[in-house]
Length: 454
Image (cartoon, rainbow, N blue to C red):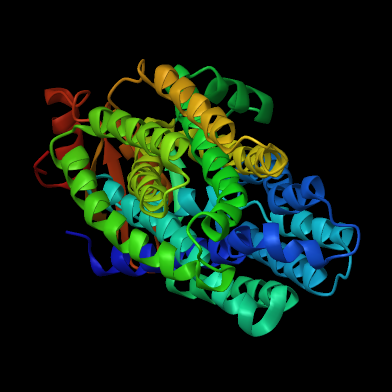
């Protein structure tokens, strides 16, 4: 089970992620309708306003994450959240669609999703990492669904500009959650790399690239769907925009009942690849249902429900899988590329959704999205099962300098990383059991002065 520190840190960092995502995504289910009130608004510019934050996120995730592999992660997170809050304020004060686009772009400049995930990986043991990442992933999925539920309701109360002010408040509130996360110092092997070499190393890893394609496709489809869907809920299901939250929230709750068991199966029985491919197939199936049955209220809701279930499973699995597959010394960099892919997908999803609104053929629109999902499924078939590490929790030595002690630990075969929490006076030692041999066990016993069960 998670210890108290892991639970507190997981809650705090998941809350930061959730608050950011709530602020970013509450406008998606309402802006294709409410955005028409801005001066200069066109369907294409409305789509750009929805998705442009993804473009600036995609551009800045990698620079932020490269820095986060070398420097303290917390100050970078604070900077990103301040940019996020500023962008919300700019959009809230705008009267034209162009002002909203600028504000959304600034908000996207707070590109710290990867830094938050990397910090969570630092403060959790390997055996508990999947749980923590699953909670993070679920917080993302839940924040999406809650955003789609709250957005229409809040817009009816405070208007679209008020909704942007809410995002600013959420960004500032998220900063306070860092108080619950401990200060950490990371030590690992093979860290002497230049920025370019580090980036090239990560980009050459085939399975990581497939995970990047997966997050790109997932968020492209999600964003496009919620630009394309609201008008159909109004036209074919007879549900007014202010009541769309009453559609999304029950579907969210239902999807969670499927998502949690799926994560348990994937982690406990190491069936991550099978569950992963099944979830993509579920997204394909949901879109196929929408192609042929969008004119029926209940078939439309069924297709949307299938999509939500599969989406939440994917949101929980992807961060966990990425944390297992990424090189330890380049963890934030790999997560930065993944987050860039995520937000680039959201950018293109917003743009594609805006263009789908111009089509006179609704089935063709859903067919285009289904085709993207099928291509994603084909690319993902070559994914291999991820690598599994383990963790030891060791008290810091009283008779040695911490840096000397960590260097001696890292010299032992099979020990991959040591994360020191000086305030708590202990460290997480991350090991690869397949590399630990008898000589390594003896070296570890000699260093610690006692035998450790591995």
